[in-house]
Image 1 (cartoon, rainbow, N blue to C red):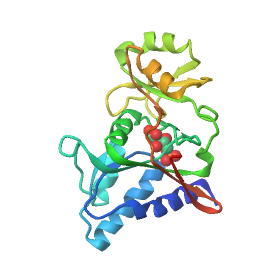
Image 2 (tube, rainbow, N blue to C red; image 1 turned 90 degrees about the vertical axis):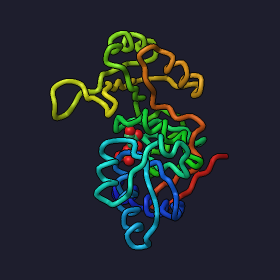
Image 3 (cartoon, protein in one colour; image 1 turned 180 degrees about the horizontal axis):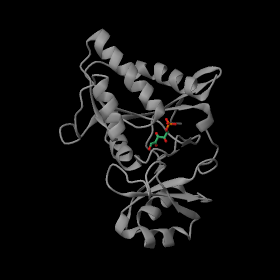
Image 4 (cartoon, rainbow, N blue to C red; image 1 turned 60 degrees about the vertical axis):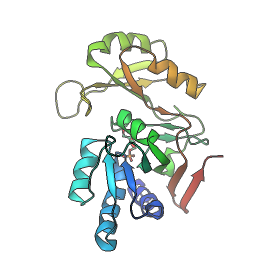
Length: 228
Ligand code: 5RP
């Protein structure tokens, strides 16, 4: 089975967590795209009253075309359930996120939810964060050079460049993304705070002690990981 099929499998299984009347936080990325389409079908077939706070422009657009009503954190500062993907998941359900450059809104939305659920295919499981992925940062453009200098103490920072536009990619919040390669992540929560303490860093992609449930699409079926 290819990775896309495994992602879809985890999205199908995760639907069991979504109940009528829920206010959802909707993450970003290709795995969440499967969920959005499936939730849209359920709203239509079962006449469910569901609303979603989107974490990116892409997610908002797909929610609109799937007939999922949008709402905001101003209207619903507390969410029933946030659903998202991840770039890495460790055995304690800590994450690296930000492959789609939506990490800041994803962290805000995930932290506003009573239940934070992550959907991945099995290739995202790691023993230690940083094993496969670099660590993304959202950075204020005004501070990009000093932030890159400071991040050189931790690894090899690289400004993320756009694929189909000249120059760096710009996030939905108007900022740049720096990917930190070769980072040795030791104490996750200390490091998350230390990195966010660099002036100009808006947020980093370490999600520590936030997640309640992970649905993992694997060749053997969907495994559900819960916080130990
Ligand atoms: C976006 C993210 C995504 O959730 C992460 O990159 C996983 O994406 P995909 O589901 O496409 O593998 O953090 O900022």
